[in-house]
Image (cartoon, rainbow, N blue to C red):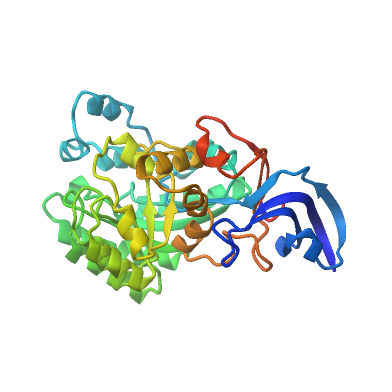
Length: 400
């Protein structure tokens, strides 16, 4: 069998179903052609291969390329001043109600041009890539007008032209209420449904639709209208749900067959059960939990009990999680949420792919894209155990 590249003398974390929690293989081999895996498994079981290039991994571990399935990577300005205010005792909700928070970033984002937004996001994307990330989801939601939401999505797509990484874009017009619509949330939701979302869909800029269901954002009834519009346009949905209170957003997301419900600190048993029935992935965001000094833990045991897949993400954003390290996010998830090592690694690979509705990445299996992260580690637990240390040896995106 002809192949372009062959990685041998490797230890694999395939994350494939039926291979145990991480699919660990001691004497592993990966072969790829045209950016797609032909074989990933024990060397002794490999077919006869005719590679153009052989890479000796010298016993290093290979995992699927990491996937950051929830980020707000494109935005203008920063919110370091709000960080100081929180240190002095102000809450996230108090800052938001005083005109800070998302609306503060909205002003800076509206003032920035498309190229400026792209350029400012590149260092954040580079930080993710440096830790083995090969696919990144990027949300809009800081423009909050037709032209500015489109501008954000365009800037996100521009990043894919600048770096070797897959970019998945999500329309998040229902992120916050812009000042010009103060007291008229229903009118803004109508603008989202009638103009913003159709414009993003027509331009081919949205892979999915998200919303923020919360007391400081949008009600379940308003989110329902957004989801119904997304459904008419054939776009999958996901939701920021149960972060600050239980608005039963996760159950609403599940009703629409959402790809994911994210945050979930205040998720109840019924919500977890609804997610399980719908196949909706729980995306846990320990960076936001840590940065906002939240004390309400997401119901990990309920999610496990109902067998809800758990993904992890950085939630990189300027206000509540200025985090660009998936490795640190894994450590936070283990330390703060008590996730296991396999759950953390699967959360940034197999389950993150599920959260994006992608079946072409996330595991090392024949037919999947050849997105690889090669690590200088002795055991997988090191990826979760260390803080501030990056053991990435090499990263291959479609083996480029």
